[in-house]
Image (cartoon, rainbow, N blue to C red):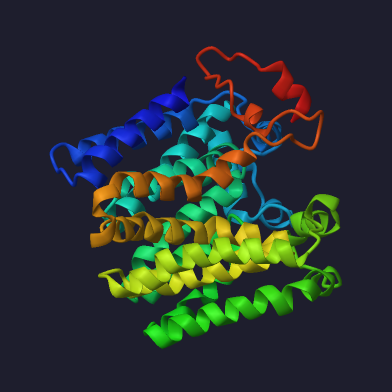
Length: 384
């Protein structure tokens, strides 16, 4: 199975290059891995659920030469960058495969570049990408995948305070999905102090949000009319029974404990090591969104962006923990245990029944079919 091949390469890379810190052929293996990830995405055939809607929608776009200014700005649910791209591709080919190839190359190039330039443990970071975000960005949220990719490119400018370049790239991000609007305020996080006292104050703020703010947050936001295309998803989430979480004390304690473990490993440990200050600051926003998402799950849309800095930081700080002197004798076991702790909750969601017919979520992506065979999975077609 193609997904097992990806995992085999990832775990080989973790063993050879992240755990034992070998250097020979490291870049070549990493490059091969991302070529493989890109090819799986580019040559898929009706794999996923949202992708089926995008395939149908592609037929409705006009070629670029017929696109008017009103067509480009007249759809509140589709932003101009997306419409221009789809029309340009429609001018070149009526085959949706052309879009898939462009999307897969652009997204996975941005992800691979971000990981390679900013992580010391690139295969562990890629494992987190594959488990947490690969299916979502490559098989589902096509518009948001472009927005996220532009954001990852913008983070390179963010690091060096190149604000003109940063805001230009964020404008491109916004032109594909309105969920990117909050990224305009992200540079304010560079003003946050990151000394030990401040780090524990931020943890205290998360504690207050969890136990005193969340119980009233859902009802407060229900009455706010979210503007533009954000309302497309927000209203359905806030009204859906699936997302109306009962905030029991037990539920809050469990979620805050899991968050605190991640916070200690990434922020607290990272502040003691040679980790980029900007990465710590940006990851704070991930934890805030994660906490808010417990009460109002619409915030998960924003964490499609912020997950990348968090997972990148996590991939490095995990090794700071397992390399501590008192853990060296059981270093491998501790690493496996920590990887399992963070990955298992996400993997478990693939085996939960979907909304319709009780079919597990993994059936969106398995079995995998390519454009070369053009097979259809009838259960996936009927369910999703």
